[in-house]
Figure 1 (cartoon, rainbow, N blue to C red):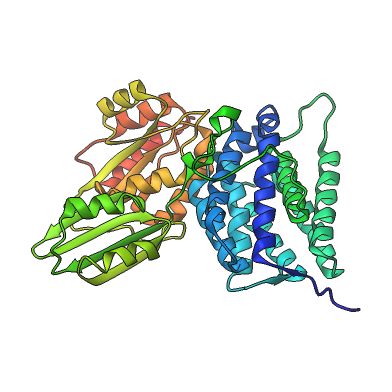
Figure 2 (cartoon, rainbow, N blue to C red; figure 1 turned 90 degrees about the vertical axis):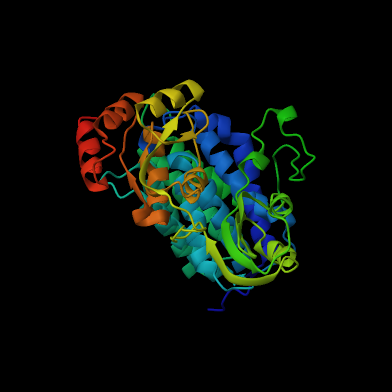
Length: 426
């Protein structure tokens, strides 16, 4: 049998991901109306997925002629940190698996891309470690099996996607129940695949879309992806014997990222920021002094987040609040840091990473306020490890109970035990 000689380039990959985003622009409101019980996304799973996709696709807007391995890594980093809600985290894991499979490749054969896609499905499956077989996982398994058989048959990538879609649709038909809405997660999986296929073929069916800063999404009543931009790299360095003024350096760095801190230490400047363009920052920094102690962390992967010399508290409580009134209430009860988020506007993984990187404390106890944040918490814990502990409250009442059990003078292990015990019945 003659092998398939088709090659998938970075440009092909870019069209596929943009096509998937375009498809979700058309379908996210429909997904919001479906049964999201299997995802525990009691809100707007379609919107969470769309905003995750918006974060993922934005890095492609200024990429030109790059390798498929490099592009897939940029998309995965942004998706992991930009993930919102349980549905968004599952999607981000597909991108993570794709990036792992395509790592180091300039282009990919249909077989290599098909296998990488199977890898992505596997990552998505592992994100939900329950014993319960959820519809999105059942569809994902069917998709992976169909893709596997198509890869073995040396089919072109477009036909691999067609077989995968048909396999997923077959699994959905078997799961369908009379007078019951389709599962949101299962439908979203197929929307993603169909978008990739249409993007690969250049068959975009969405409204006109531009990622240029001047494009006004509000006029079309669509979520603006620019509000979900992700800065995936944490860059710290020292500019020795620097005569630059900290305020002026900070003003320059604000153009390249966020969470910017510039501190003078005798004759040196210590710099810290989160950025999506570390190379441009370094080009600027060479003019501020001799660069030393350069450290670059990919915040989408497990890493240590200690940055500048500070004297932080030992432990603080980080709580999610739906509005300013609730934030004040939780702070009065003992929460030290607040991340805003509600069912209609879920906080992203990156929101929590940024909060921890502020270095207010050595360790954080995180109190979510919704079941929709379960997998977001899973992703935050995977990335930050021992730096955070999760007390899995699912509503405001649970947060209040946990805060009532928190004692400032207790060690973190005792507090975690008491807080979890307080909400055990939830």
